[in-house]
Length: 204
Image (cartoon, rainbow, N blue to C red; front, top):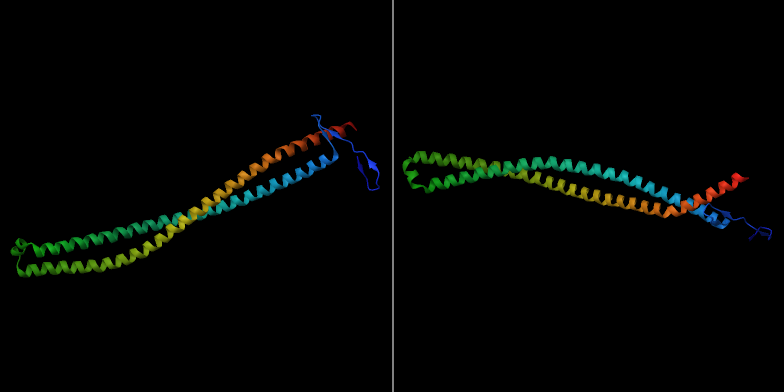
């Protein structure tokens, strides 16, 4: 019973569902409002997930691009490192050969002064060329190494971003599941009321 706009008492009919539960007008109105709110929350969370999927795809693309760039630069880095190490080995071998030649008295005795000078001159010239080539190779290698380190750092950052957003996406899905579980009793009550109301209208 409630008062209308004129102050008169008005008796409201009670709706009874298939389970025998009574639903007064105020409860019906509350369930209808709750149902609309439940649908609104569900749709809003679905849109959030849709946006998360788009962002996740974007981060995955950026991650793939960073990884491809890193792998390409890694190939250049390894090639230059191999050249640099090879030149260092050549220079070391030449240095050892010069040192050995100067220290090996038996070998020196077998060679004339002219032969010894020519041999040492060739070795020293070769060592000088190797030193110049090594300096250039080291400079190139350091530049490439710097680029590779930056590519590697960028890849790691992209990987972190992707994992963070992946976690964000999983949290969004979990939130949707919570909303769905919370909506179940509301939607069930709404269905009970709707079925009861349909039966009442069918009898008229």
